[in-house]
Image (tube, rainbow, N blue to C red; front, side):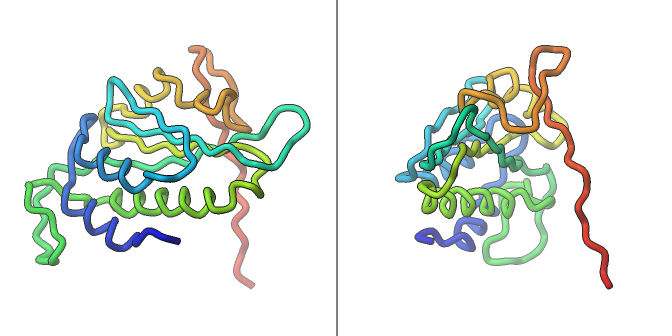
Length: 176
């Protein structure tokens, strides 16, 4: 993988933004995705980023679609860790959203490197406003579920006309 995910996570940790408008965070995510074969769309009501990867393997009938999502926003909490990459703006990624963003960027890089092997499409959903301000609602209104041309496999229309995802049954294995 050509991106340093530890450095990305630390950089994102230093620029935490709260709410629905996250211009620095969005710019850094876009820079991390630059050069990948993704169809990128940006939110107009919120600072969201959506990337669609088209798998290269042919399929018969409807192409499967998978959506991978993460949170981008921080909390209005002062960081007192003393880390050399600590935030200094009065906000903090106290819930790990900096790590979530880095993991999704890493997944995008890895899956893009294997795009020819994929018999379906992947939507990468970078969502602001997870911490109590309905960022997902705005992204649904702007069509994230149909970003690939059809909704993710396993989603069903909701009564509002939007799509909702069904929760898959747990497949946790038990320790012997």
